[in-house]
Image (cartoon, rainbow, N blue to C red; front, side, top):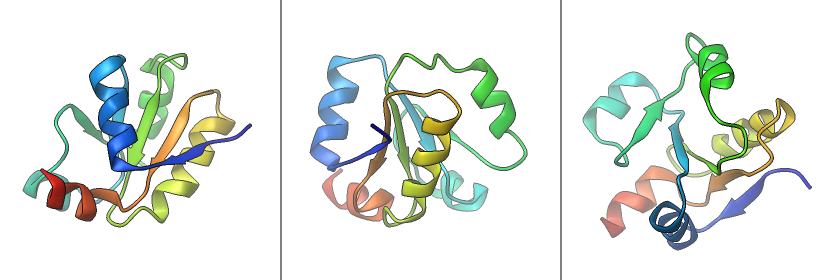
Length: 99
């Protein structure tokens, strides 16, 4: 199994019931303008540090703007050892409509 795509509702349920890590792969300016609580902004500059320091056994929830780029990111994180890697369908733009 590789990464999975999940709905915003599934991501919220996972955050409520498990100690999941949330990664925001949008640019730093967009992240600063608004993000999901507890999210870590990931870039090429800090991705290696995040891979090295994040528990690979915890769920990893990844989002971007609309849920497209996060699929490739979720696959990457799965390939480097995160066995519960999830891409959020609709991304931050849909999530913020539900906040």
